[in-house]
Figure (cartoon, rainbow, N blue to C red):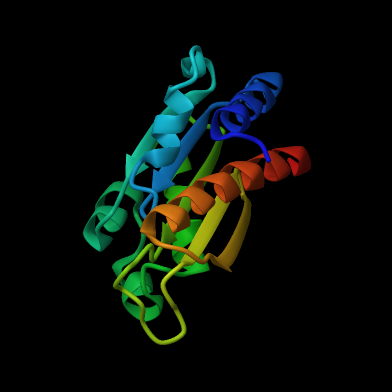
Length: 161
C-alpha cells in the first residue's frame, strides 16, 4: 500500500502535469488532508487552500452549503459533500476540489449513518463526483482511511477530467 506521503506526492505530480491548483473542504478529517499535502515541499505549486468546516454553520458560511440541505439530509450526505467541493471551487482560485464529511466516532451515529460513514466530493468545473463509504475501526482509523480514499479518489478523478 502507498504511504500517505507517497499518495500526496502522486497527487502533486498529477496536478502539476495538468497545471491545476487543488482546494480542500474538510470536515471529518479536520484539516488532515491539507496538512499532509503541505508536508510536501513545493506543494504551493499545486495547492491553493483548505477549508476546515467542522460545524454545519461553517459549511454554510464558508462554502455556501445551503442550510436547508443540511437540515433535510444532514451534514453527512453525498449532496452536502458535493456542495462543499463546489463551494471550495467558487471561493478559491483552485481548478479542482475535494471534500470530506462524515462520522469518525465514537459517538455521532444516527439511523442509516453508523459510525464510520463518510461522504466524499470531487469537483472540477461542472463535473462533480461523490461517494459514500462506511469504514471500520476507531476514530483514528476512520480518519486515516478517509484521507487515503480522498487522495486515491482524487487521482482517479484527475484521470477522468
